Length: 230
Image (cartoon, rainbow, N blue to C red; front, side):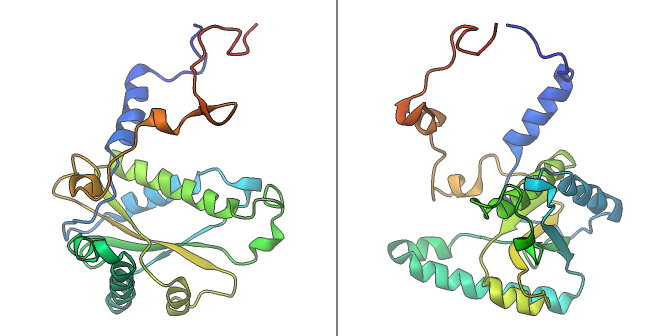
C-alpha cells in the first residue's frame, strides 16, 4: 500500500501516538508553579484547534485569585455531593473517588464558550452543538501538548454552569464548559484513574465500529478497490 507523501518521520509519529496513549485525566498534583512560557505554549496549542466555520468559540479564564479558586472549589464540591446522590446505589463508591485537583494544581483555568454564538451559522444550522465540539478539540490539543510537556491536566465538569458564569462575570450567552486543572505531577496513572479504581472499563473498539449502517459488522478494507483507489 502506498505510503503518504506528507508523512512525518517515524519517531515523530511515535511521539504523537505515545501522547495519545499516555494522556490521563489527572486529579493528583504537586504544588509547584507552572512556568508562564509553558502555560502560553499550551494555550497556543489549544488555539490551533479546528473549529466549525472557523468560529473559534473558545475562551479561557485564568484563575489567579486564591479566593476565587476557593469559591470555584466550593461549587465543585456542591455538585460532587449532588452527583453522588443521583448515582443512588453507587453513591458511597463515588464519594471515595478523587474527582478533581482544583485546590492543588499549579494553574487553574475555566474554558468557556463565547457569547453571541448564534451569529455563527456556518456548519451549525442543523448542528448548533458543533461550537461545543470545537471547544472540545481545543481542550484535547491542550491535553496532548500538556502530556508531551510532562504536565498533568484534569477536566472538571462538576459544577453548576449558571453559578460559575455568575461568579466569573460572564456575559449573557457565554457558557462555562470545563474547569481545567494544570500542574506538575509525581507520576501519571498507568491506566485511566476510573479504570484503576474499577469504576468503569475501556470498551473494545471492535464493539463500537459499524459499517454502512448502525449495528452492521465493521470490515476493514481488504483491497484497493474497497479503499476507493484507482
